[in-house]
Each structure stands twice: as C-alpha cells, then as structure tokens.
Length: 398
Image (cartoon, rainbow, N blue to C red; front, side, top):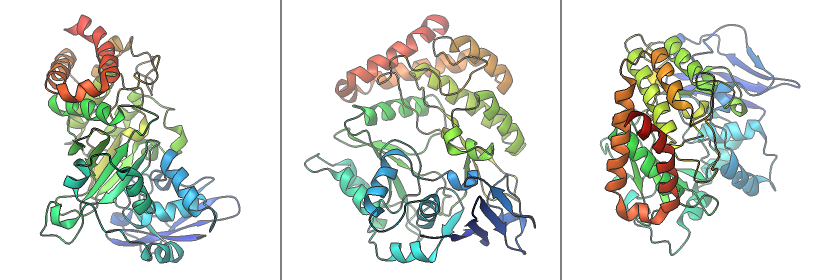
C-alpha cells in the first residue's frame, strides 16, 4: 500500500503527495516552475498544500460505483484499497488530464498486467453472445483512471485501427454499459448526445454498438498528437470534494468560467454552458452535476482554458420519473419550472437570443428521433421520457 506518491505533468516531476496521521499533504519540488502546476487552484509555492481529505484535483479521477466495487473485489485479498492506492491506480496508466501519479508498488503491479488494446470495429460489432463488457472490465480494471458511478472502463484502442498512426501514442475509448439496472441506457446517452451534436454543442466522437448495449466515446483530454492536456472538472476548480458534486449551482459554473477561462474563450464557453444546461432541461437530464462540466487547457501557465466538450448527457426521468435538476438553476431545481430560469440564466451567460437556442435544440431533437427509428424502437420508454420532458418547452417556445 503506497504512502508516498510521485506527481508529474508532461513537463516533468512536480512534487509528492503523502499521507500524514491526520491529513494529506502535497509538496512541490523546490524548483517547480509555473507550467508544472498540477491544478489551476494550486500554483507552485514553497509551503505545502494540506487537506483533511485528498486534494480535489486528486479526487477528480478516483473510481466510484461499479468500477470501485470491481476494484475492491479484485484487490481486497491482497491489499487495503484506500484512497492512496486508488489515486496511484487512477493516475498511473492513463489518467484523465495532464497529472500523472506513480508509486513503485503500483508500477510493479501494472507491469505484470497485459493491456493489449481493442479494436473499435469489433467492439461495435459485438453480437452479445458473450459478455464483452465484463471481459473488458476484467482486462482493464486496473487502468482505473476515470470516475463516475455508471459502469464504464477506459480501454486502449488497438493501434492498427486508431487515428493519428504517425504517433506512437495510443488512442483510447471510454466504454459504458447500463447493464440490467438501467435498461436502454446506452441508447439513451447516444440519443441525447446526438441531439447535442445536431444542435451545435461541441461533443467528443461517440458511437453506439450494433446491438445497442454499449456506448463508446473517445476521450477528449488529448491533443491531435494524443499528448495529454489539462482537464479539471468543476468540483476540483471550486476546491470541493467529489461527493459535493451536487452542492452548487449552474450560476457558480458560469462564475468559474469567467474566473479561469482565457479572455478570448469566455464568451464561447458561456454560450456552450448555456446550451448544455438548456439541453439537459429539455431532455430531462437530472444528473448534470459539477463533475459533468470541466475546463481544458494546454498548461496552467498559458492561460488558454476553455470549457470542455459536453459529455454524460442522459435522460434520467426514464428511471427516476420525478427527478429534478442536479444543480440549482436561478433558485429552482424543478425541470418543469426551468423554462423561466433558463431565460434568466441566459442573461447571466450573456446569451442574447436564448429562445433561438431552445428552438434549435427542439428541432434537433425531432430530427434525431425521426432518423433513429431502429434504435428508438429498442428503448421506447426512454424516448417517451425524453418527449415528456421536452413537451413543456415545445408549448412555451415551439
């Protein structure tokens, strides 16, 4: 079980994180420069950063839910699965963002593992004869550099079928399965993300497997040469623990954008934030919490931060009929009452024609549903839930 971890960025070693009797401590190297900062909230300094729990930037990628359960099942007999071990696992192989975390113990464990890579075409053509998702989890669970409660796994794409073949780096895929707990969840996310794309919201590449059981998305925290770039979700940027992801408001995200984004990126980032929040209201997404929004940047010293592409947009009312918004929207969490709140939120974001944004999204919703007949037939309950969520917006803005 590691008690001291090495922390680095693409620019080299930044410092060390360690566990004391009462706190977690991060200390930069004496020669750490501005570009080796591990977080926009944590610039290099002589004094250590001390937290009662793991620092927010380190909590950001810790596994949750299904993945955490699978890790505990795998490792419980050989070691104590504590936050330091989880941090070393999530930060060693292929962490989200530009911050890597290593320990000799975990590096030795990972060196004994085989991560051969998977072909996207084979994943999408899976016929369901065997549980491919369970197999992927079994092979790649120790590359646990991704958070979220939903069953998901981060898989290296086989280089023969990965983009940018001129680089030795590997493209990677986030593969999600709703399993039996949330029927139609892969279709659900595919439809909602398709509406986002059709309405002009920036999204990563994504796919639905032929049998509609898996949702696959390319990670977006890499540049065109597949080098890591900075990513911080809003819990980290607000200095919050991961469990506080429901504690703030959409207005607080707008304030964070104004505080951290580059001046020439603020307007576009705010318009994208408004569009994502609006679409979440329209499609009935009650899980658009702080961890589902984040910023991308090349490195902290360049001042080029911008809002990350939209991700994790799903209808939740198909599973929780009376669900509400994840965060406060101008004093209210009611999806039904969100129509007026969105107009007020538009003013806060500097969006001059919010009604047009809403109408564009409603049109995109109709186009996506009309062109996805075979898919929608396999998840009628999801489509009905989305339609019910959109109806008040049609009546008000249609």
